[in-house]
Length: 163
Image (cartoon, rainbow, N blue to C red; front, side, top):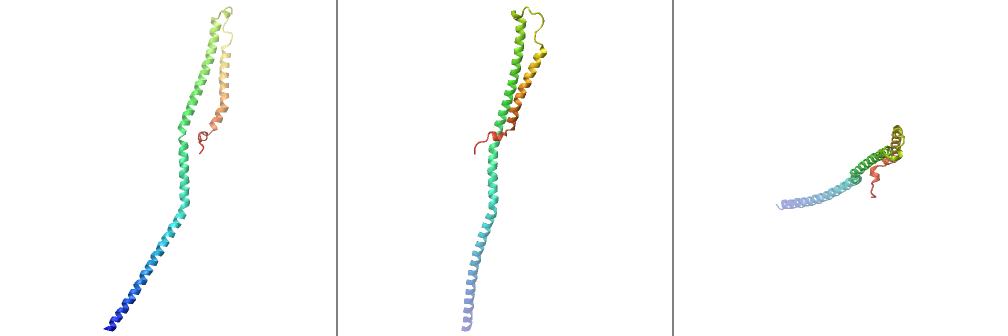
C-alpha cells in the first residue's frame, strides 16, 4: 500500500505541477490577448483618424455655410427695397416731366404775356413726347452699367464677415 500511496502522491505532485503550468500558460495567453486587443484598437483608431478629421472639417464647413445662408433673407429684402426705390424714382421723374410740360402749357394758355399770339402751343407735342422718351431711355442706359456690376457681386461675398 505504501507504494500505491507513493504512486498517488507522485500523481498529485505531477498533476499539481501540470495545473500550475496550465494556469501560468492561461495567464500568459490572457496577457497576450489583452496586448493583441490593445494593438487592434490602436490600429483601428489610426485607420479611423483621417476619416474623423475629414468629418470634423466637413462639419465646420457646413456650420460656416449655414451661417452665411442666414444672410440671404436680409440681402433679398434689401434688393427688393432697392428695386422698389428705383421704380419709385422712375415714376417720380416721369411725373416731374409731365408736370413740367403741363405747367408750360398752362402758362402759355393763361399768361398775359402770350395773349397776343395766335395759333396753338408753339412746341410740337411730338417733340415733347420724343424728348420725354429720349430722357427715359438715357436714364435707363445710365443705370445699365452699375446694375450689371452690382449683379456680378455674389451676395454672400458682399456680406462676408471676417472670420
